[in-house]
Image (cartoon, rainbow, N blue to C red; front, side, top):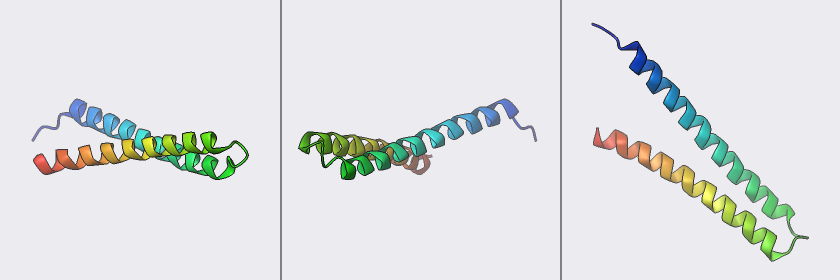
Length: 75
């Protein structure tokens, strides 16, 4: 049995980068929701922008997880 170490390392590196990216985007979404709560003095425009950013971040996380699950299901 031969192990293709280059392919294994490449898979590990890509999965690590994707995981860190999804976690970073999720944290950005949580931060945007937090800013929405503290943006009372900024008016409705600031709250709306924070909510839009949070929604975009959570949608990106959902898309990445859904894509990963579809890759697993179709394999």
